[in-house]
Image 1 (cartoon, rainbow, N blue to C red):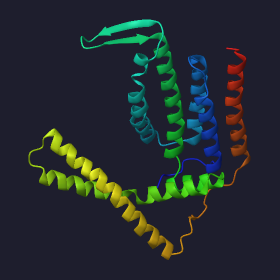
Image 2 (image 1 turned 120 degrees about the horizontal axis):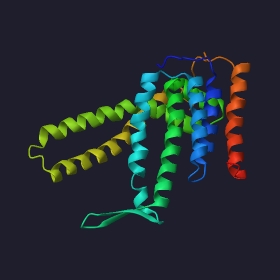
Image 3 (image 1 turned 180 degrees about the vertical axis):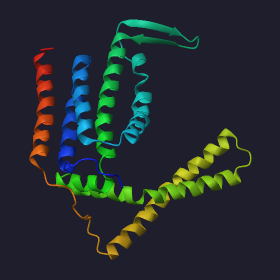
Image 4 (image 1 turned 120 degrees about the vertical axis):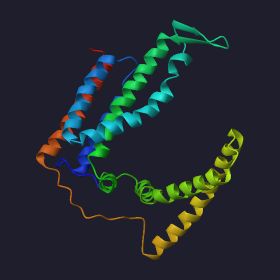
Length: 250
């Protein structure tokens, strides 16, 4: 359970997060001044959510590795004016100005979005967060799927651990080909096993009266004047920045 560090209603936090991410993702290519302004807004949101700092920083830099590694090839695949050419004998890599601009834009968007999402996740209990999605009328079936995945992910982890132990104990000549072949069998076995486990879990829950809904004791505070005012502020500020972008004022 994540300790609650503020009295904001989970609905307020979810709406602020979704609205700001939508506006951040919609920023045009190369709008660095706007990104700096959004950074100020994101910093204010982090202070408002009050996540545990050490856990927040660790989670941000861990998750940010994924978009960074994926987007690191962008400068080499987009056309534009050549800035740098790298000759590797086998092939030549060219870095273009347009590729650099797109790369920096993707990095800024992903970093700012992950700051907000991480602040939300680390400052809110997981079950409360799912319950908050239902409060803002997120599709019931999607919330139920997320809840069941979160609740029973340990089964897949346990099966993967057992399969990995079996591979390590039986593959004596650990060549690249043999190990990867066993890992492919393990992945296929986990895929088939997940169907059987899902069927068993469904029958068990259905026999206990599960109808797709899950309930928690609602200990969240009601939306106070402060929460409503913060909701309007952090919804109007990105709207104002988008208007500035469209009118090309900056």
